[in-house]
Length: 170
Image (cartoon, rainbow, N blue to C red; front, side):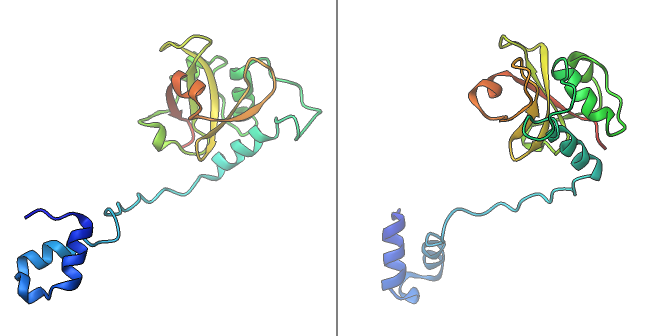
C-alpha cells in the first residue's frame, strides 16, 4: 500500500498506531520526517598561515589597494611574484607551475592559496592561464586586461576553461 507523503502524515496523525500494526506505523512515521537526511560535512583542515599571507599579498595587487606597485607582465608573473613575496619560488610560466605541488582532485576540494589552471583563449586541455584560489568559489588573477581582479570560478567562462588545480602550500 503506497501512500503519498501527505496521505501518510494524515494517516499517521489520525489513526492510532496500534490499529495499523507496528511495522506499518514505523514506515508511515518515517515518511513524516522534516526533509531529506542531512549528510555530515567533512571537517575542513585549518587554513595555513602561509595560505592566508599569499591571499593577502595577492589582494594587495588589486587596483584599489596599492597604486605604487609595478604591474606584473602576465598571469604567471603575477602568481610567481605573489608566492615569491611569501618565500615560495615557482616557475615563470603557467605550464610549468601546473606540474608543481600536489594535484587537487576536485574543484570542491580547493583550499585558500591553491593554484587554479585554465585553458587560454580557446577552450582546450592545454594550460594557458593561472590564478590563486581565495575562498568560496572565488579566485584572483591577472587576465589579459592587465588589471588584477577577483572572479567566480563557477562563471560560465571559467567553468568551461577550468583544467585543474595544484596545492603548493602544504
